[in-house]
Amino acid sequence: MGGRAVIEQPTDQPFLVPDSFLRPGSNFFIANSANPIYQCRYGLRVNITIKQRDCHYPVSPQGMECLDHGFCSTNIANSNYTCSCCHGYTGGYCEELDGCASHQCAEGAQCVDVQQGFGGHDYECQCPEGRSGVHCEVDVNECDSSPCVNGVCVDRPGAFQCYCVPGYTGIQCEIQYNECVSSPCLHGGFCIDELNDYRCDCGPGYTGEHCETKVDLCESDPCHNATVCMDEGNTYSCVCGHGFTGVQCEININECESMPCLNDGSCRDEVNSYRCLCPGGFEGVHCQVPESFIEHDAPHHSNPEPQQHNYYIVIGVLAGALSVAMSIIAICVCWLQKGTNPRKIQPISGGDDDRFLYNISSVTKPRPSVQAIYELTTLNYNAQIDEPLISLKPKSI
Image (cartoon, rainbow, N blue to C red; front, side, top):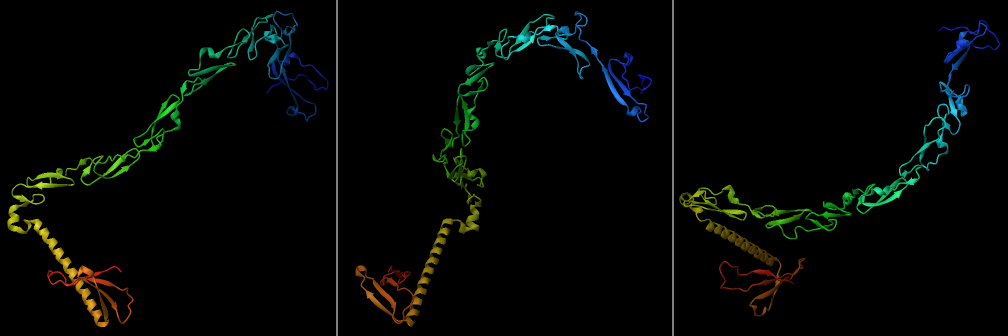
């Protein structure tokens, strides 16, 4: 980096730096000493900044700066000198009389000086919202434009306020309030928004202002051929009886749809059943048996009703035999006890009934069982052969 010496020999006396070394902007200087210790690296470094002095108004007298309405000054942030104007003046050379120094703008308004050159002093007032006039002294009534759509307007300084009628909201009462936002309808009820009101459209299973009351859907017996009606809130279901179907069990299932009758037999639908009307030459539940087979190969199937009757007879005979066997066993047990333990029999008069009542008890040895009294029928020699001669029937004590 090159440089020039300002003076040839070091000195401890003050000296002037020639103008040739000073150019507009920053100028760097280094002060050294004759002592070998002080080299350029360790010398005193000085920065001298040369700024343009621009404070003279073109038509003003020579030497008058800032028109004597201010002073010429600078700071480290400025690249040149400028005018700092006194109160009441403005402009680059303080040539403009600041009209806002004594303005009459109303409170809240902003004063703007009108640039008129040397000697001008006019200004303008910029009014805030809600004010008008030369000095913003007039309060504008914002309610004159009727901004409130569904409400009453109240004028405020620089603004307005709307008081909405019931059912509306918003800055200008332009929004209808939805009363259904709070979901007032219960049990799946549909909320219908109205002006400042709402209405609940309840399902068939509920009633009331908010669908809070349950309606018994099974009370009217909607299921025609069902075993159970099940209330399921806003609907019901029917558990149909055998042979029926449909929402209300109103449809009789046609068992003949599967065509169960064979050999051109006619099917007659019945409740949970069907009947086959067989043509000539066929019989059976499904008309599946030829009559020739019934007459020759299986004659015992020709008349099913007597065969069923025989089953009842056999069951009755077996039940009777079992009853007789139980009676015989009871008599034998009594005879065996008679041989070992004598008993005393006391006849008791039975009145007009022609029967005897016997008190049977142990004579020799007390028994742990409770004394029993039996009522015996009288001997009837004209009785049927199959009937027992004596029957024992316990009598309440």
